[in-house]
Structures are given as C-alpha cells and as structure tokens.
Image 1 (tube, rainbow, N blue to C red):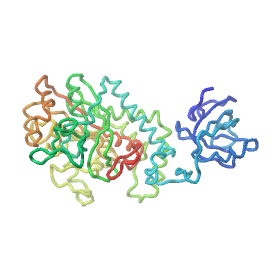
Image 2: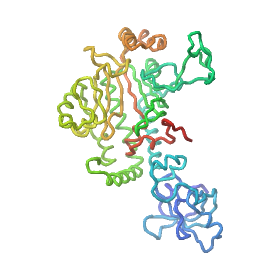
Image 3: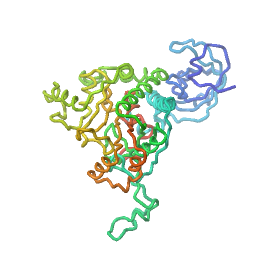
Image 4: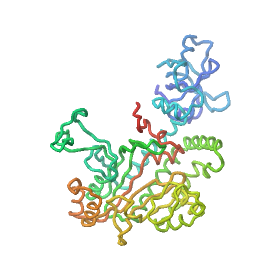
Length: 477
C-alpha cells in the first residue's frame, strides 16, 4: 500500500479505504485524537485512536513533535471542522519527542524565538506556508523563463570583479589569516593565494550574464549573492538570492515590458497554486494589523496587494517627473517625510516610492531615466549627459522591487565612466571585449528573491523568508 500525504487524503472523496500515512503529531488530546501534519498542507488530519485497545505505554509516546506511521481507514468525520478522519488500526512511533524539551509547543511563539529554532520553525503553520510559497515562487520563476526561451546560466560565486562598485564583499582566501605572505610594500601578496589574485564572494551575476546574453540572446541567473554590509535591519541579509535576466537587442522599453510581464506571471502562479497558504497568511496579517495604531495599518490585505500588481498596468514615470510630484506633494510640504525632497538628484527612499505607488498613482510604478551619479557605471548614458537608462519597479507596501537598465554598449563611453570611477580596465577586460566584438543594445534587471517572497507572504522581516538567515553576528545552523 502506498503512503498517502495529508493533502491527498483531505482532497479525496470519502470511501472506506485502507490508508497509510506518516507525519508529525501536532496535538494529542483526550488520549484519542491525533492532529497529524506532514508538511504537504497547512491542515492537519484527525486520526482517531481506539485508546481502550491500545497499549498504554504506546499512548504515552504519542506526544507533540513525535513522528508516527499510521495505518487505518479513511472515514467521514463525526466531529466538526473536518470532512474526513482516519480510524486508526495500528500506530508505530518512528521517532519520539520529549514533551518537556520540544521547543514548538501548540501555542503562539514569537518570530524571534522561532528564528532561534529555525531548524524546527517550519513545523508551525506560518513558516510551512511561507516556505511552500518560497518554493512555488522559485518554480514559477524558472517556468516563466523556460517558457519564454531564456537559457539558465550559473554565474561564478567566487569572483575577482565587483559588479556594483559597492566594495562590500566577503574575501575568499586560503592564506594563513595569522601570518599571510607579504610583498615588498608590506601588503598581502595575493599572488601566493589559491587563485593567484584577490577574490571575493559575488554581489551579482550580472556582468557574467551579459557575456552570455551577447551570444545566446536571452539568459537568466538565479543564484546566491553576498553583501558584507554591516546592516542589522529587517530588510538586509548577508546571503540572499538574486534573479537576473539579460537580453541582447532589447532596449529600456523592452526591459520594462519584460519585468512587468514577469512579475505578473510569477504572482499569478502562486495565486493559482498556493491559495490556501495565501489565505492563511492574509488572516495572520489581519490579526497582526489589529494590534497596530490605525495610521500604521495597511490599506490593502495581502491578496488585494498581490492582485493590485497583477490587475493594474504599471505606470511609467521619469525620475524627473517623480521628483516634481514629490517636491510638491503634501507630505513633503508639511515636512511629514523623514527625508525631504528638495532638489533633483536626490536618491529616493522607501517612503517616497510608496507615496508614488499607494497615494499618487494608485498602481505599481516604473521610474526610469535616473541621474547618472546615483546609478552604476554599466548603465547607458542618455544624450542629456546627466541621466542613464535605468529603471526601478515600485510595489505597494515595500517600495523598490526590481532594478534594471539598458546597458552601456559603447566602448568609449564605458571606458570614460570606468576611468571617472577609478575602475581598473584590466580587471574587466573581458567585459569591455563585448563592446569591441559585435556590440549591440542589450538590457537586463535584478530582483532580490527574498524581497519578492516578503511581498507575496506579507512577512515584514527578511529573516523570516529564507530558511537560515545570515546576518551580522549570526551564522547559526
């Protein structure tokens, strides 16, 4: 007999059939009713034990967290709250769980406590729902690109280049940390290191993805990236996942079309396939919102927010137009913004982005043509010499979701920009080669995967949407 999952059994028409199931005990009450869960669904299935004819020593081992193997009959439920239940014929304890020390008790736990027990937190409804959604979003991303003719590429995790120019990178070295070899000037001699040069963990796969787009046409990366930014906020991780498509012969307008279509597609996928988890997380969010002051509550529920993105056309607005709107808006004039907008060239903060989306345009917004000096060196310079063909997509509740650009395809302009920023041409000789041999217009964007998972689940701390968060002073598990 095949072992069934809880999800399969709850979906079945009721028949008096023999079934087998394995899972973990959520609760065991009245020495009779086991609430069993196996991770396949939020819902538990009730298993009814004939306690009068069951060994007492065995009953004592049916505790919260124990792993069990049950054989029995699927029957129409006698009690309220479930359609079917299992009449237990035999029960085997696969793994005991000490009720005195098992951390995940059937009660409300703080997210902080659950982070400390991240190896067991997916035994709770909230985290099992979040991680099923993370898995579905991941699959939807691969499906979208596969269906649209993109090739998946694995870019290096160890790199000698700094794509963002941020410099906040983790060094990769095999040298003796206490006694590294030094050169004549007294600095570390990386020629003697494993790779013969200074290397780091990557902050982005974009530059390498561009090289493949310029031969395969349409490619994407989906891999881990690392930032050694000593930031302990609810929005920063030291290790996170990035999605980065790159497309040859595509300009900024095509890039915006691609990003909008992509976002709508992956969110539609989870709306269709993870409805139960979304509804549970929406209810959790509504209950949490009730404890907040009215002014801090979200105007939209979780599912409304996702539909807001799927159902609306994204409004395309130049950075210059957005600055005018923000300069003249009430919150700015009345000094309600934490960061006041006073002049062109300001870097927009989350509060400004959310104002544009939630209050002014009432739809997702794509800002484009940003000042060159607040964007990366590889973005294509516009004819005005002041702005670059960059674009950011802004979502409700979260602000920036996607950042991308048309890439600078002109060799002389790119060389000038690199010189101005003191970026060594020798380090990126291969990147410059793309502009020497068959250069062409090309574009791409980046999406921080955890940010998307936060948006789709309503979780407010990025540490709660990745299995094992890596943050300053924390590399547990």
